[in-house]
Image (cartoon, rainbow, N blue to C red; front, top):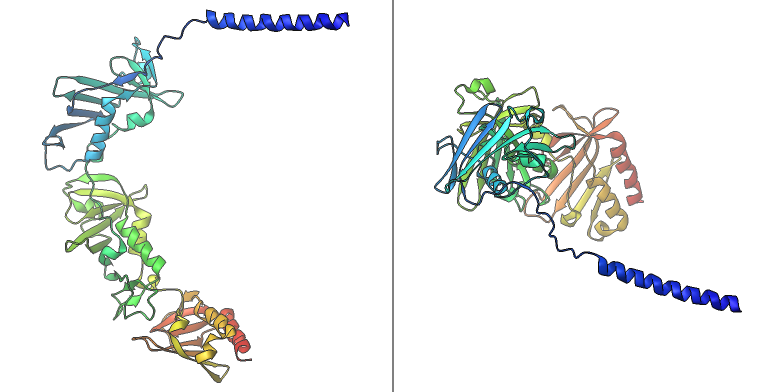
Length: 437
């Protein structure tokens, strides 16, 4: 009992001493009145920059600010990418550094004795700053020298890493919605393709599921596959420009633009009347680009060669729908099927039976597998006639003809080139037996 009381006393004493020591440490701790060090900056120009000189790999580009725009090399007619220059101005007002190294005796080891990129900025108030960029550090940053040596993030160096051609304002296709398109014409040699968009379909189409239509070379507007037509439209109007190959070239034949590989003409209306933009595509480069030129522009630009090639080699038949027959059952009043030499007619309540509806969905979901050359039709395998309550295409016929052991030839809505797998067609005929059973 006495030993227990002694342990309790020791425990209480130890606790009191621990609390006292903690209070003493807190009281003796020096007050943290020292402010955190400010972040280092390469430069902080306070005035508006009036002139800028870029030197990259021996090429000097001069920019001056006049009448609220940047002018390059003293020529106000030269189109300047104002966005890129504005990014330079923003960075010069506050250019953060990763680390301040100081003033080394020898700049050679930093790649700064003869830098490949430098920028000189001057303000109207007389401020001036010269920044040279050197090698990359082992950590992936970049050495930069102004009044002393710094390391900076590589993306800040890239803000200034432009030459004359890079600072030109590139031509571009208008940013269009399909509904703003009047027509798209692609011409390659003697081959031509016309594409139109009709938001509410067209009387030329048997169903309003179609918005895109092919004009030439067809005699009348022909429904196009939505996905394929969209792809071609955005390939042309959304063509990305990677750079500029030449400004005011003396000889367009060097780029294959005297006789272009293809031309794409876009006619559009943004609410202010019809406007036209023409894109010409010339030769391809060894590194996967194609030379392109807009209208009578002074710029020869670079685009993705694979995309321009795809545009040029798109044939009208490539845009036709793969769906053989997409007639909506709601538009059908009488349906006649001739299968196995027998003819069956469905109307009224017969068109609403579950077995018929299920089979009809299979019939109208059939996709063509490939195309056939124009040839003499073989014997008819089965035929379907749709009588409809529409104002156009009131009677339509779908027939399948024997082609070879692998395919049947579908004939529908003026098309007689779609080949469908034999097993698909024969399955449609076999399932029809369940409908009439």
